[in-house]
Image (cartoon, rainbow, N blue to C red):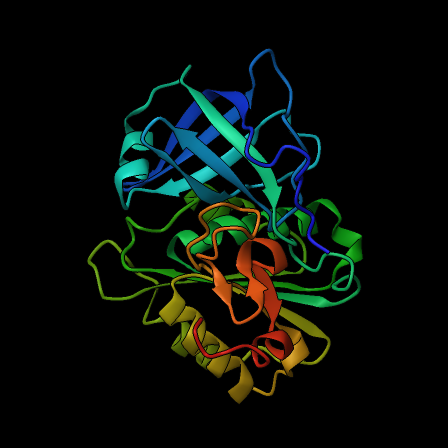
Length: 277
């Protein structure tokens, strides 16, 4: 069953932008709360919301952390709506509806080692699960994060990547960029190949992947080469979600609607779907 809040699914909450942080040249984080204060609704790691302006609306992953009095959305500038979002200032009012989607397998992952694999803005959804693991550290084993982007400037959440997360107990952070740069002294190469190079042991581990579709495709293949079983391989799908409530048919794959039945699936589930993802 979906976790969608569908009592009034098309009626947005009005929220106010309380802060905007530039993460990369084309990614900004927008911090929002209800007009008058507080959260419009609770969002679990991996769930999404529809953000709207007069030019339209779009589905975005919400960065979650227990106890926050705001929601955070990291948004890449790629089209009309996101162009407009990147122009707004603190104090802007937005429409917000949700939450939509099934979220990450928090409960079934307890007691296991965690492997997070992300590319580009795909780190934003995984960041919620990573934050959850750190906040509930005793519930999870070793945490390994493998992240890559096109360039150093395109790496999101640099303070967390280079300072906060590596300092956590029993945690490894591995970062790569696609091509050599004078400013970059770290690993160079694509994420899937880096996964195979690092070869994290699949024993007792859950892997969670998010990024561009082509990266996801090859990362899942790399994990299978390393011996990960289908039920150990979890990913999010970035199919275009238009309505959020399974009515428009824009995001269906076979009988599954990404906005309702996803966006999180394990490889066992994906193998039962048409190869359209």
